[in-house]
Length: 400
Image (cartoon, rainbow, N blue to C red; front, side, top):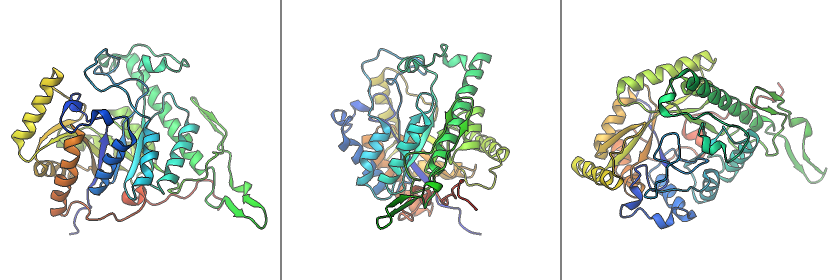
């Protein structure tokens, strides 16, 4: 019997860490959060650990301790750099690791996103992706003035009006992804001739109007950026329930799910695979990653005590949509390998305190997984699609 495939690992980077008091820990570097060097250092450490990719969190409003509305807190990190621009800045400083910024499909035009991510793919020589996110926050919509949303509290999400709004947002996100993908293909691979002798730079017959007409977007195309090096950079999305599971199954290359045990992991994988088959994609590779927030130390009591100390600083016990793990790298390796049996092909880890837990991942967890034959010993490809075992797709507009 052949050995199971190597796990895929990613890290989700957000400020000083996912715990709201992370910025107050020694080594957190709060004065550097808005510098290029800070982010370059984090991605370099992730690459030293041979991780598949990093994601960069982003939003169109200030961070908040409230799930759906702004708050007035001043004791937590507030403010962000633009995720796409951060990824583009650190790309030339790295060689192998994938770079996946978050984009808010609700308020950004797919033409702009297609151009930005294609540019990132060129800057990184084929290591770009994006994480699509939706937003129903009233304060974020108010920044643009193009649409309004009713107040949607967390408890309203399962009401008829809440379900209708969420379904519409994810329907719009699906159209957003489809437009972006068509724009990436709107230049054939051989469209650039660059023949000085004949004076022909492009073959105009190999640029295509996409002529997308939908409920949410009307986009003619073509893009102004040639087809990206990967052909199609990686598209990913976080999914917690059936509607976003449908988005992942129909439109994404990677879905991030948030199970709290093996049974929940198996159920999420099953629902996404069913959606994938419904979309006619059953034969296409689609990765499903489990998300976990991690607090890692050499022994479990130290990890538990560190989280408790952070909770005291924050004034409340930290919880998350994802499972919160406290323990040793070896114990985390046990959990990841157990959950892999539920059908997960990888994991996206959210460091509780980036200044501490990122190195615990790269210098503790990774060697532990390598000893068990469950993680790579070297980068085996130079593109993100290559690291994930995904072939470069054929351009949909290329003539037979």
